[in-house]
Image 1 (tube, rainbow, N blue to C red):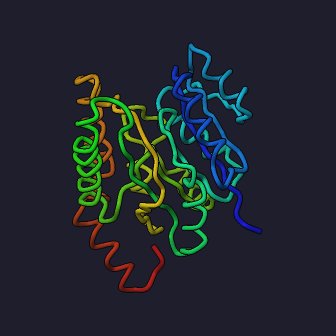
Image 2: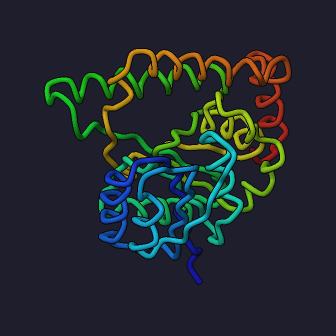
Length: 249
């Protein structure tokens, strides 16, 4: 039997964007087996939108994306867990691309995809996406020694999540949950980039300079909380030794 697929979407006060995301998921060439929407204390009708679309709704009272995302992963029943945000718009082949990639690469524990901006000034969409995502990928690679995970577009095996679920910093709302997860998953599982997993995202991160500054600070803090154990040279050497010994990462 092919592996089952769960999609996890954390949401807070984003009903209109969530509705658009769920419509895109309903048009997938390979439909997911379940969609888990995690309501992180919304005051709008995000929960009603999820239920109306047939998603499985769970509530997370702990504040922050790390707690909400982890609650969704814990609740997911599929063999593969795919994650995107409420303002993401996946291409019709998004689910199929991840499912095929995992079937082709049993040695890989997680895949991550890129994104393009679908709103904001058209002339800025491509260059800003290149700077934003390229900068994150470069910084993550330097800190981790392998590709980072991008929370708006990533997928991993449920057994890999179970292996690290007690180690992630789910109770710290200031951290980047995707980068934190990459620190733990990447220690023993391969993480690879999947260009076929395409989707669009909102340019909202650039709309508020103070919010963007908080994102940057959160990224640095996510790296620092893993030191000294995961200080880059130490982590790189550890991974290199494991590779030389033939241990599956």
